[in-house]
Length: 77
Image (tube, rainbow, N blue to C red; front, side):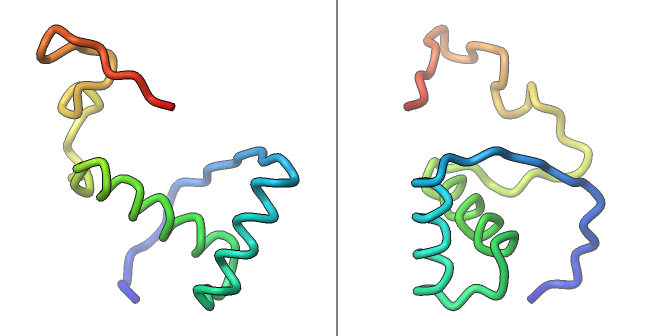
């Protein structure tokens, strides 16, 4: 576990099925909390999409958010 200070709060709403899936994964992965499970899944999802962890001085435009770097829009499912 890293010594990262968490300074930002993110509130999300989930359906009952999403929450059930999260809890099922959390318990099978032996995660200590829902928050830690969500952080781990977010990290894995971003890594799977080829996104590195952002440096604190990077802006959303550095990741192509809101811009079409190659002229094509990317669709997320």
